[in-house]
Image (cartoon, rainbow, N blue to C red; front, side, top):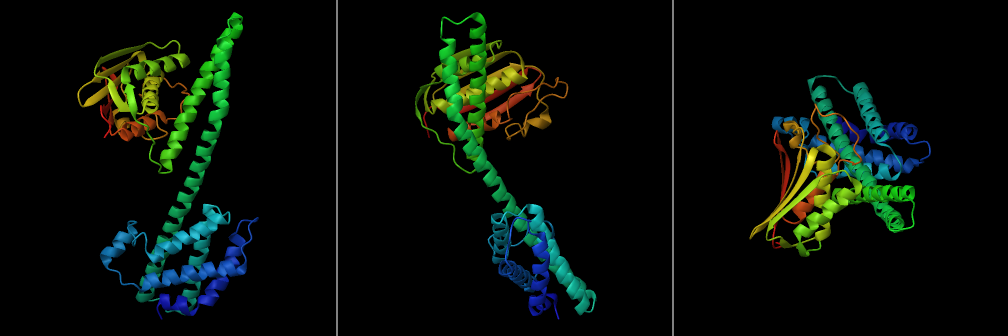
Length: 373
C-alpha cells in the first residue's frame, strides 16, 4: 500500500490524532470545536494525498526543493492558503500554525511506520510526503505573513491618517502664538520651538501615510496642475529652514520651469531630499532646477563623506539609511522613509530619480517631463 493510499484508508484515525493534538495547540482563549478541527485535518490530508499521486520527474522534484512548487493558484496551494486564513481569523500565531503541521506530519509518519515495510519504496513515499507537507507549510506561512503585514499596514495607515488632524491643530496654534507681538523673548522662543517640532512631526506623519498607501498596493495619487518648479523649490527650502534654522541652502533656477505636476507632491519630494542633505551631509546644500523643452531636472547636492557603493543599490528602499563607516553616528529624527517616498513621487510623475556619491559630494537628480504623460 502506498502512503497516499494509507492516508485515505486510515483517514479517520489520523483525523483523531490531529484533533487531539490540535486541541492542545490552539490558543488558550480560542475554542475550535471538534467539527472544525476534523474538517481542517481531512482537507489537509486529502490535498497531500492527491499531490503525492501526481507524477513527478526528477527535475520537478529538484525545482520543488528549491521552492519552485506547483502553480500558485493550484487547488493544493489554495488548501494551504485557506488553512492559514482560517487560523488567522481564529487568533492563531504563526508558531501555532506551524505546530499544527508538525503534529500532522508526526502522526502520519508514526502510523505509517507501524503499518508498512520500510524498504526503498517506502523511503521514497516518505520523501514525497515530506515534500508535500513542506510545500503546504510554505504556502500557509506565506499567506499568514501576508495577512499579518496587511493588517499592520492598515493599522499604521489609519494611525497616520488620524494623527494628521491633531498635529495640524498644534501647528496652527503654534503659528498663532509665534505671531503674537506681545510675547516675551522666552515665550517667543518656546513658541518657535513648538512650531518647528510640530512641522517635523507633520513631515514624519505624511511620509508614514504615503508609505502605508504604497505598501497596500495603492497607486500614489497625483493631482496635476500648472506649477512653477522654482517657486516649489523655494517653498521647500523655507520649510526645511523652519526646522533646521542653522542650515545653509542655496537655490539656483534656470530655463523653463513651469510644468504640469502635483505641486504638493513635488514640494514633498524636494523637502525630503533637502532635509536628507542637511541631516546627513556637511556644508551648504544646493538645489538646482533646470528647465528644458521636454524635461525639468532638479538636483539636490551636499558635501561630506560619500555614501558607500554597497549602500547605493538599496538607498531608495524603505527603512534604510546610508552613512559612511567613517561618519560619526548621530541620531536622526526620520524613519528612513524619505528617499523611498521620493522614488514613488518621481515615478508617479513618469519621471526618474538617481543618486551619485563620490569625493565631490552626493547628488540626487530628479527628472520629470514638462508636460504630464
